[in-house]
Length: 586
Image (cartoon, rainbow, N blue to C red):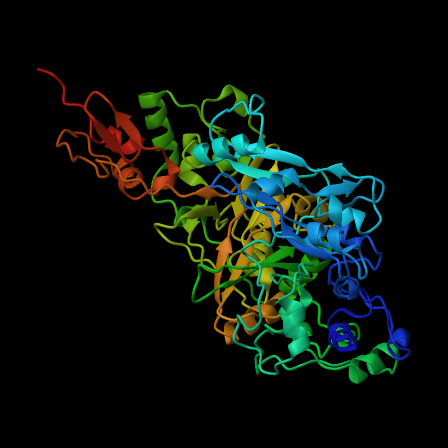
């Protein structure tokens, strides 16, 4: 046990230990992301045992409480007391620990002492521990069809019907102590192929019944025998605050562990000063068994706050050169006013405002059949659809604008931005700044819109070049950055506070990167129409260059496909229908 503690402390500190030697007892308390646990005797029935309590117990084990399994539901496992103390009555020991067939299991269910909430494999296991007051667990039966089991008089009859109808039978108690392990958890040693220094104690601890999830591992010991791969470009860090204290001593005195990389151990992480970088990050991870080449999936979640974003804006504002904001007419190759009038005459569509995009956010959309919301796509009113700066991207990280991408977000790149600094940051691709790389989704008044990065959002929302901390934080509260998915062939360390450092590290160890959009991001329309060019029908007599441009060059997601059920024909958009009119009868 002392060897496990020696290996555990450099990873988690003294939190989660139940007994320490005199030297370990003087170690400073340090924040740890290791899971909380208990050293109380009843910890098994709270699912929070510290490893020392678990391994000292001789009587509690994880047992399958499913009597008959089926495809309806997964098997159920629970911690129960299933062995007797030494010198117990031999007959009780035999009845407690004997192997039973299915019917015998139904007749001898697990029991629980309601006062202590401790469950026993059967009443005989309770008896040999001196517990005589217990209640049977319930018998739960689930079938594909409704079956009345009340008329059946024996366990044999119940089992026969369950076999015939492929029902599942389980023993259940409301507060049972589950010990089932998800498939996305690593449960054995050296799955990653990175364990070099074999340790039998670590292997036994990992592959025991002990389940207290650590990252994507069954327990911290499984993480120890599947250590993360390291990178030469990210050196191991020790204290750098240049003053000797208890953390620096612990940093140097305690053993090194790969689980705290890039820090030497957990105490070193408490005394390393890390340069600030925009974005507070945390990680979630899982082990995907069906992905042979990249089974270790890590998700980097980011949170932006004004205190991080404002210095970036101020630094950019001090630069002598910023990107020039292009003229609005540089992107739009058609006469918007004329097209809106033509569409209005042909389809009786309304508009959002006389000034188009500038005022549509304040428009009363309830009286309109089309949408004026920021982020509308095929439902937009014509003036918004023709002018709003929106593009499709792929889910690569960093993302790229593509013509047939899957996801959609705002790219504010014209008269929507009047602040040169914000325009420059909105269109930047600085790989040293996560805030410029991640798309974000902003929620407002029941709708959602996605932006190329947080600066595009700020530029869209601000009415002045002066951005305050309070105003910006009120904006960012309702903003969700997209999640970066890092898929790796080996286990990687998830301790880096700097997102750019983590991205560089995972690139060094051959991980792939992609984006997971927010749940409210909009999927780009990729559906093809029968008619997507002007005059495919040969019936267009009044040529108009603006209609031609709107039909053939506007992106698919700006307008919905129109269907003519009478002709059984679909049009890419309303302007393609205008330039492919029905032939007039003679």
